[in-house]
Amino acid sequence: MKNTDKRILSKSAICFIVLMSFFYFNLTAQELSDIPKGKLTINMDVNDNDGVFYNEQLVQTFLEIKNNTDEIISIQIEWSILTDDWRSLMKITIPSRLEGKAKLKAYCPLFKFPGPGFYRFSGTVTSQTGDTYHATKVIGIDPEKISMPLNPQPDFDTFWESSLKELEAITPNYKVIPQKREGNTKTNLFKVEMKSFGGLTVRGWLEVPQKKGIYPVLLRVPGYQQNMKPIDKYDDMIVFSFNTRDHGESDNTGERSYAMWVRGLDNKENYYYRGIYLDCIRAVDFLMSRKDVDTNRIAIWGGSQGGGLSFSTAALDQRIDLCIADIPFLCEWQKYFEITHWDEIDAWFEKHPEQTWQSLLQTLSYFDTKNMANRITCPVSMGIGLQDDVCPPATSFVTYNYINSPKEYTIYKNETHSQPESHYENRFLMLRKIFGME
Image (tube, rainbow, N blue to C red; front, side):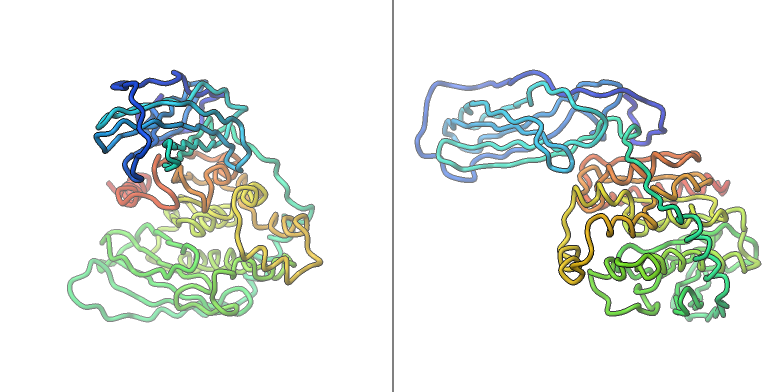
């Protein structure tokens, strides 16, 4: 197994897991009847840097249990393994005891996984007085082999061709408005406005190096409800922090809320993400119109919703030269709804009793990045939080695995719907290296 977090697709084979029944130490035969709650500390971990296993490696998952008292505590340890969509695969309970101030390392019994995917380990420790302690961990098995069928509708290509033509027919009326800034900065700042799909005005912040020249560009696209702001990071790169409709200072399609993403789900022509995908294309149009932009070095980068927008923009627009998609949303909708549950979907079905899961998924198929992935021709880099239940890793890998251009991914073992601070600086360094800026 490689020591690095970054992996290029190349490995194969189905993995197994875990070993070694139980290992305990410092135990005695003494039994106690009254154990105060909160006296144990438990932590779950696996024997790997990023929690992802390849080529039939055995996964060694274990609980570290610490007795914080001077008393001997009798416990039951329940192990369970589930698929990422919550189907039970294994459950077993094993008794044990801890002497006062002792530590116990308990290993999950051997288990053979059914195939590539992501799996949930759960460990529950229960004392004889009924106090419980719980820990969970998601691990991955050969994620490059995860596959779900493509489901583009027969008019998928013509739908997007006509959508792009509709966008092209709208005169953008670019407005680039200089902004005053306090203190010393690396760049000059401009507020940008432009007309996009449906006649809405979308806006963003353009940062241009103070020295005249032709520069590579980073197009930053927003996460859900995120308001993109200037970053003033480099004096040799143009950065466009762009807000799609319903984000930042851009126009709205209705009231801003957490339910925006289900707006128009009954019709592909009116669905929320049709406009947002096209907004991103319009942002690329704007960048291509500028004489200070190196049109052969345009990168797009976003996280969560922005990660999905990075995928879709790179797929729909061959002018993108580098795609960075972190913890991406908008991937593999069917599995997404098998793993997650959102009140917005319940409310939408209640308002649209004529709709079914089948009709909903048919609409979403036009916007599922897995159905676009084979159109991407530029290099792709994806970041994943292994414990992410908002944008589950399996959904992201379905899209990733359909990409045919050069690609790599980074997995963070303990991150949820987030990336560590170091990740962002590493992303900038990677971008500079790929664009030959070192």
